[in-house]
Amino acid sequence: MATSPRGSHVQGLAPLDGRPVALIVGGETTGVSEEVMEAADLLVAIPMAGQVESLNVGVAAGISMYELRTRMVLAMLTERIRGSLGRDISLTGRLIRDAFDHAMREAAGLSSAQLIAMMVIAAEKRTPATELRLDLGVGSGELDALIAPLTERGWLTQDGDGYIPTPAGEQALAALWPIHQQIEQSLLADLSVDERTMLRQLLGRVQHNATALLRQR
Image (tube, rainbow, N blue to C red; front, side):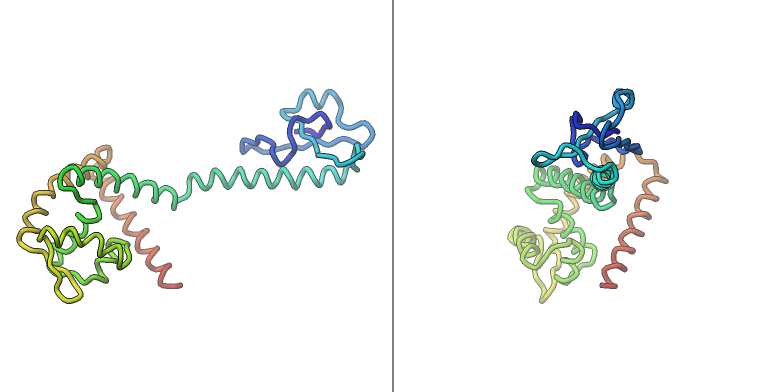
């Protein structure tokens, strides 16, 4: 990359691709040679104000390096963000939830969160609301909205500060369970038995580390 008044880009908008950048600047009088400009991948210009036509080479180099470095950091951040753990997990979680939501709504008019609530309560026989909120990752108002359709159908009853499944709820869960298994098998179709085991172990470790991090706050 070379500096030139004929540059097609300013440094802060230069289209970088992540590769290392070699910057060539010329003297105030003659500038960069024609040979260098022809060989350069990109010519960049420093915006000038008023009647100013050139800058001292040291000043020009400082401005260019600062702008290009900032541009390189932003390009690097873009790639890191796209490949960040948080984004990958968030995207994966949303896609899995959408797949389960679609299947559950078609089968029973429920969301995947409502099915998970039924599964947790049925497994524990009685689940406190605080524990259920933790398992579902929702607040009090959100939990009430999730549970209300289940109690209206007679699948759950409230017991003090917790919930217990009714016989009708257990029967409904038994009927919906094969759909849940089918979706889960489809999501894991390309993974071997060992890979599925490893995935669960890795997710468990990440959850453990996240919980430990939150406890430090």
